[in-house]
Length: 216
Image 1 (cartoon, rainbow, N blue to C red):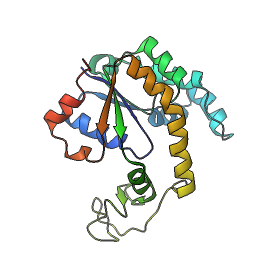
Image 2: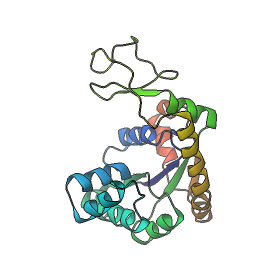
Image 3: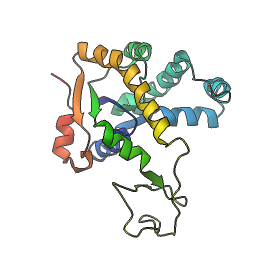
Image 4: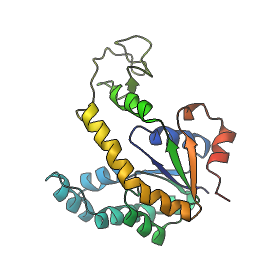
């Protein structure tokens, strides 16, 4: 049973690597903080209603509330029985410290990607408006320019409003500012493992298993 934290800048490929790990370890639970937020808000849980109060005003959700939502998800039986991939949490040092009180990780995978590739990945990505399939105008084009490979329908390029160069560069800067103390925290615990995240889709099952094995 693997217990994994994925850590990396926007565009580093955390979701892609998580999908590869799930292919190899099919029972492991992929926990995305974005999914946790959406679930709590859509179900109007007490935690979700509190979080919505902040997001509706464009404010950051406080650490304490984020931690409470993650803790609730981590305490469910599927996680206890099958392990987890934690994606998008922790994002601050207090979150990392608090996480250790209710969940222990075997390994923290830091996804290393050069900044120029991060920019290409984010600025070039777009999605099919019909089915949501993700493409990249530089790195991953559909076989036919205006036809989706997945659903076969004609599509126009639609990009996220916040995927512009100024915003993306600022998001990467914020990540770098916040990540240094967290990475030192996990390095001091002997849990940090650096991963070349340029070609994670090409990793074999055995390579994935070696990657997620506990740091010795």
